Amino acid sequence: QVRLVESGGDLVPPGGSLRLSCEAFGFTPGTYPNYDMGWYRQTPGKDRDLVAVFSAGGFTKYSDSAKGRFTISRDNSVRILYLQMGDLKPEDTATFYCNAKFGEMFDFWGQGTQVTVSA
Image 1 (cartoon, rainbow, N blue to C red):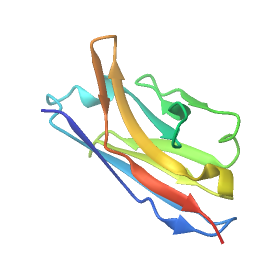
Image 2 (image 1 turned 180 degrees about the horizontal axis):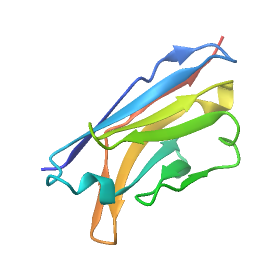
Image 3 (image 1 turned 45 degrees about the vertical axis):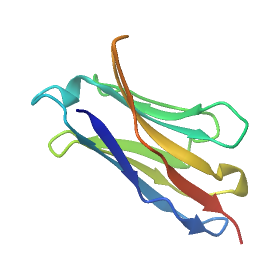
Image 4 (image 1 turned 60 degrees about the vertical axis):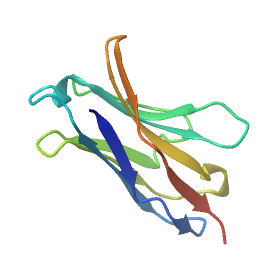
């Protein structure tokens, strides 16, 4: 059974940095690289919004708020997705979720990791 396990969330002051990780389990051997992997975030009462995506083809896409501050990367050999975040702002406070998607049938989410940016 596929599981995505996020880690790395923490309380950091404004201007700080964090690296989130998402480790994938249960993928059929050799299939993980075929998945588009992404980070999303959500605050209470709001929709889950895209932060960054690293496609199976090697393309990356960022939300406007993430551009220039966040970097998404993936290591297919160990099935881990990363999100390096810098210059964090209070408005970045959210629960960050990892997503793995392949076509329309395969769409998996992790349980989330909390990022709080506050002095």
